[in-house]
Amino acid sequence: MLVCVPTHDHLIRRAGLGDAGTIGAIYDEAIATGVATFAAGLHDADERAAWLAGRGDRAPVWVLERDGGVVAWAALAPFSHREWYDGVAEYTVYVSGTAQGAGVGGQMLDHLIGEAPALGYWKLVGMVLEGNDAGLALARRRGFREVGTHRAHGHVNGAWRDVTVVELHLEQAR
Image (cartoon, rainbow, N blue to C red; front, side):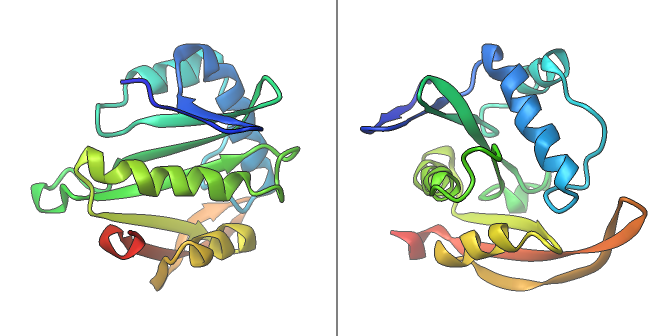
């Protein structure tokens, strides 16, 4: 299913294999900040194309186009393989450095919140790395509540990092 949400200055649509290189570049840019993800290494077009192709129906990826180019991507994925968590998704939002501070992250998260119920999700969960002040502020602005902190949850750039867990029950977002 192709979902497009055009406005006067941008378009949000489902990601295709042709977006893989740009998705990888945005991801690598975020990795370099040291506060966006525990992931490491480079994610070229081939790697991201395989990643996109391997995602299931309930793990879609969307991109936001502005001025003819992709400047952000966002995804939902099942929180767990356990059936009792079927209605819970983890969300991810990544924005190119050139588009940060322009409301793009909020547009992407709003889109995920709007699409999640149609995919059978009733709750979204986010894992925000220590130091990702913009990501935590975005979640708070969209009504997510802080559930707690996983101490020393992962290792980045030679240091253990905490992760703040946020959640939004989607009936609260309506």
